[in-house]
Image (cartoon, rainbow, N blue to C red; front, top):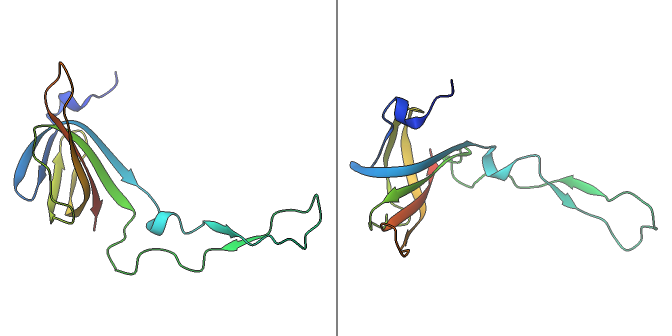
Length: 126
């Protein structure tokens, strides 16, 4: 039988605040958006039918040392907006276990008819 987040009582905490989370997406991506990305260097001197010319991006990753390619997106119940660039310890226990220093990239609140006030936030993990 498939495992659900309810089987283990998943919890989410950021900078000492617990959130009533309705959705968590934990992403393990490549640093700097890929590292294998290519840029198009085709030119007008090419003839019809030639292959597109490309080369690896000259710059990959972030200028800092915290670009791990790991990120977390959450949706939660409540009207708290988490400050952009706020940094703290992010902890998820239960369905997936994560404990890392995180920075909030963005946060928003949504008000919808016939629903509770919900927030969402995106974090980069160090």
